[in-house]
Amino acid sequence: MDAIIYVRISRDREGAGLGVDRQQEDCAALARTLGLRVIAVHSDNDVSAYSGKPRPGYRRLLADLAAGRATAVLAWHTDRLHRSPTELEDYISVCEPRGVITHTVQAGPLDLSTPSGRMVARQLGAVARFESEHKAERQRRRRRQMAEQGQWKGGRRPYGYEEDGVTIRPDEAAELRAASEALLSGMSLHAVVRSWNARGVRTSTGAAWTTRSVRNVLLRPRNAGLMEHQGQEIGVAQWPAVVPEPSWRALRALFSDPARRTSPGPARRWLLSGVAECGVCEEEGLTSYLRAGSAGAGSGVSRSTVPAYRCGRDEATKHVVRNAIHLDRYVAMVVVEWLSRPGAVEALTARGDGGAARARAVAREALRLQEVEAGEMYAVGEMTRTQLAAVNRRISAAWGELDAADAAAARTTALHPFAAGDAAVVWEGLVLDQRRAVVQEVMRVVVLSAGRGRPRGWTPEYGREWGYFDPASIRIVWRE
Image (cartoon, rainbow, N blue to C red; front, side):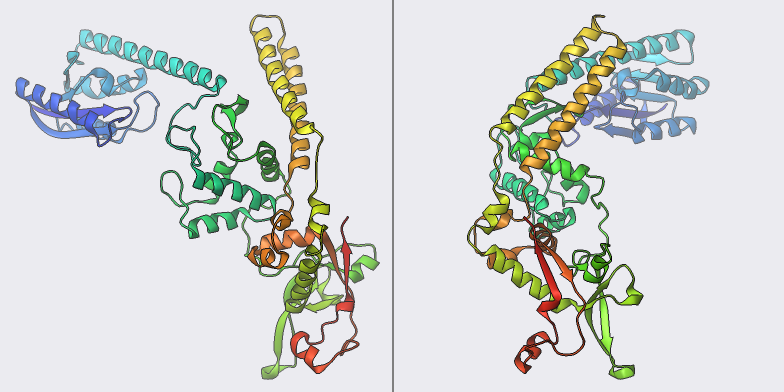
């Protein structure tokens, strides 16, 4: 008789498939004892029969049996084949009409062509299902208890921490803090991804970063030393934070902002595109922003063009047209000069909440306890479903108010990098997104109409460096 061996293990803790190898050896020994000729071995390593996920090896087994390639199946135990009554019935429907006998190392033979054989198979299947469900329930309860105690629930090494999930890994923690601050100071998520991958920073599994993986790792409550269970914050964790909680909450508020652009779009090239305003539109009581394009002079083969900003409201009217290179350079010089003044950065970044942040942390814990208490009261019948829903709505609204307050109080401004260091050096080290954020943080740039020809005080030396650019046609409005 020709036989097929099927082996499976839900979780290969030893690695290298050692668990299925031992099953295969035992099944091969049983085949020799029974005088069966093994024609194939199908294996599913690290695949659960309880989860409902596809099992490629098991599907190949059924296909071979349906094609009549074997009249016997060898498995270590019936629970290696099935932990689902539905799958068992499919297996019986294939084996019964073909007289396929199932031999197991631990549970003996099953002749599914007979009523008694099918009864035993179904009984064993019911026991296997019960064991799986009971184990899953114990695991869920254990994970919940661990979460309530702030313990790490195990799994893949979390980025920023060692294998124990508790000890901080300094180099990775530094990357998390720097990326959080950079995003809050205006850098885009795509810029963080490019930076990490270009510098060889890798995930905890050694893979390259994507926008999704970076976003997920930066928004984990664990970064702020908080415990999460089934998507909900449930208290303080036993591991230390790698990012201050207010900064983490500000970052979460930033990413949840519906007005935030999430698609990468074309790469930005100019400092003031979409930032500088049209002075002509302002006089009409409107707000419109300049867009980068080009402007030219001459015609035919002698025509030359330069990058230029134009009013984005109505390009045909040509409200304002300005050399983009000169305008970007001029505004950058003004920004650096202003940030170099003593006390300028401190005046905008100074903040203090007089202990309000601590009060909000206490309020969060009180809300969490109220939520738990309401759930317990509902469970014992001391609160109706309607009352529970009302309490949950109130708690959810209070959580939202605390999140908004944290984000407003703790948000790192675009000027944070200038807190310590030479302004010109810091500016040169910023990426374009951060420079744009700095400009918007400290000023409004309004571009006015300019007359034709050379500006007042023009000299040939000035013209070689600035052309006909006129600083008097740019109005800077400093933000308080």
